Image (tube, rainbow, N blue to C red; front, side):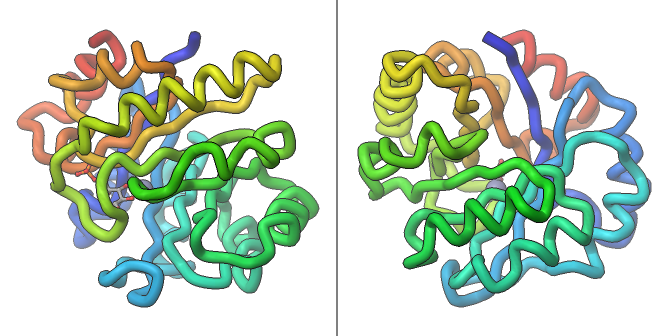
Length: 216
Ligand code: DX5
Ligand code: ZN
């Protein structure tokens, strides 16, 4: 299985967004993770379209956009226009899963669906063949720097079985509390892509920390 690292720009220095994006661009990380929060779906507000611009300009890597917003169907096309290569919305945030998937695809991006820690991975079964990625939240969405919820490993393993039994290629991505200390356990449970914010940007040598996680 492949191993992908997607550093979360939520933990970058917003006064030096271009510099920090170029640093990730030069690193071994394959993707760049963008956390969009609306203050309604989660109790925090991060940033929107204008802030994606300097990030998109500073890297050719896959822009992995994680929408923590209600009614994502209203905005998904605009995120693709703003440069998203992959748009992930929350299962809990919409009544129109099918509409979200279709809009993202028609706009030309890859599609992901994310579930919060309390959501049963079983709800994703009907959608797995129609999407490119599932994002398992291993903390409550809304903030960086939280601790990994250990029960997430079992959810990842269940999704791995569902995807393998159906003969699908759907990528499992995991987000929240990931560091070099638990990266191996998360990959071993069946994840292919890890998001890391504070572990990357809080490290003395972020590029070396990325390699440590990829080689954990
Ligand atoms: C949380 C975000 C995460 C966050 C991860 O709601 O979705 O992407 O930036 O931060 P760490 O790696 O610090 O848990
Ligand atoms: Zn995220």
